[in-house]
Length: 290
Ligand SMILES: NC(=O)c1ccc[n+]([C@@H]2O[C@H](COP(=O)([O-])OP(=O)(O)OC[C@H]3O[C@@H](n4cnc5c(N)ncnc54)[C@H](OP(=O)(O)O)[C@@H]3O)[C@@H](O)[C@H]2O)c1
Image (cartoon, rainbow, N blue to C red; front, side, top):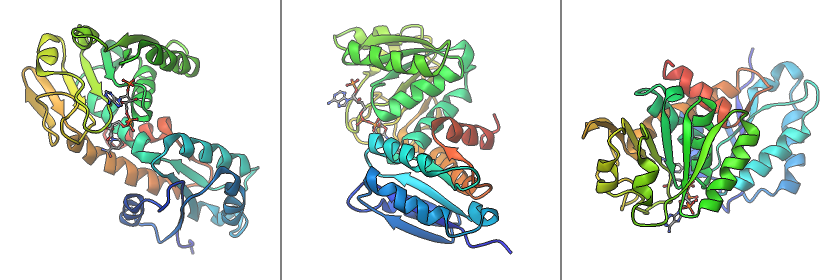
């Protein structure tokens, strides 16, 4: 008889995320154990509690989810969790602090429905945040030529450098969006634009987008007005407009939620999975039929 599934939610915030708890429940987790204000130094004892209670054959029924608003902290918690494992003594773990992995995966999957990414140039606006960097990495991993855009070209160049080390052969160019025509220039000859700017920050005007005649897909991940891409509606889901296919943040959100739940269910299939950006993308791509 299989054991009840237990998800251990490790969260660096004051209160463990209610959003993540609701999704875990909807994904069918039997029991959720929530830990908030988790520091890296506390991870070992928490993970040992997960590793040493059930026998090896039952460890797949225990898993860890790392959330919280701070993605850098989530990444550090993930490193600490994985360090605790040895041999068969491990449990599966998923990292989705601030929804960064599931959101980036959903955006790249949405783009890939409409263009051949390997044959496309994609511009990622405000690419230096946690979501933007993941979008760049996933696009580069699918063979796209990626323009990495930031208000500050040196920050864009740093992102290119970091990702080039992880993805040999990545085709990345840094772009500055500082200046009246800079955003339009970054969009020229691109087939895809993904706007990953902070909530409530406009990044490209309708005129910038209209000038980008080659654009086939435009995706905006900012749900808070003013939106990142002017003229796109937050609920757009593959809406045809001006010769493009448009997605707004809520339009992408449906796919994000499906990926989140599917990844949680995947955790309980074996005890050896580490679900970070690429693995979460792969789960999303499979459920999207690509
Ligand atoms: N649907 C979902 O479930 C979901 C989940 C997670 C995130 N999101 C959304 O995805 C977007 C990206 O998230 P994130 O956490 O990566 O964002 P973030 O770190 O807050 O910001 C991303 C980038 O936006 C640019 N930016 C910040 N403040 C700015 C300003 N005042 N003016 C112009 N640009 C500014 C910066 O890029 P530069 O400095 O390089 O220009 C920054 O690196 C957000 O809109 C977020 O709300 C949605």
